[in-house]
Structure formats: structure tokens, C-alpha cells
Image (tube, rainbow, N blue to C red):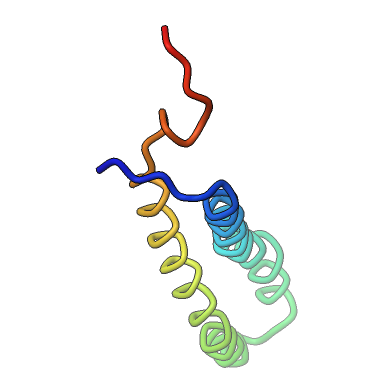
Length: 91
């Protein structure tokens, strides 16, 4: 497919793709490296389960939105012809 979007559209999709990646991976990393170890030290097992369920209810929509945004922006980026979006060089 030979598709050449405006430069601002491509820059916006790159930025959104990066933002969604940082949001998704960053939340997973912060949960596993910061929240879960502190939770295990401070809370009883019953309270841990309640806390994890509440955290999952709050973060799951953000994760699904980030993954959807990654899919959409990734497909858009793949549809761009790299030769026509950058400078036209002849080798």
C-alpha cells in the first residue's frame, strides 16, 4: 500500500504509540517492583486480595486502552511507505 500521511499525523502516531507503551509497561513495572512487595509486607492475605481486586478494577481499563492504542498506531505506522515519508533519495 502506498500511503503518505502528513508529517504531523505520523509524528502524532509515533508520540501516541510511545505514550501508550510507557503507560502500559510502566504500570506493569511499578506494580511488580513497587506495589506488590510493599503490599505483601504491610497487609494481611485477606486484605491483599481486596487490594489487588480494587487495583485491577482501576487499572484494567487503562491497560486495554493502551493496548488498543498500540495496535491502532502500530498498524498506521506499518501502512506508511518509508521511502515516501522521508526525504526522497536515489541511490
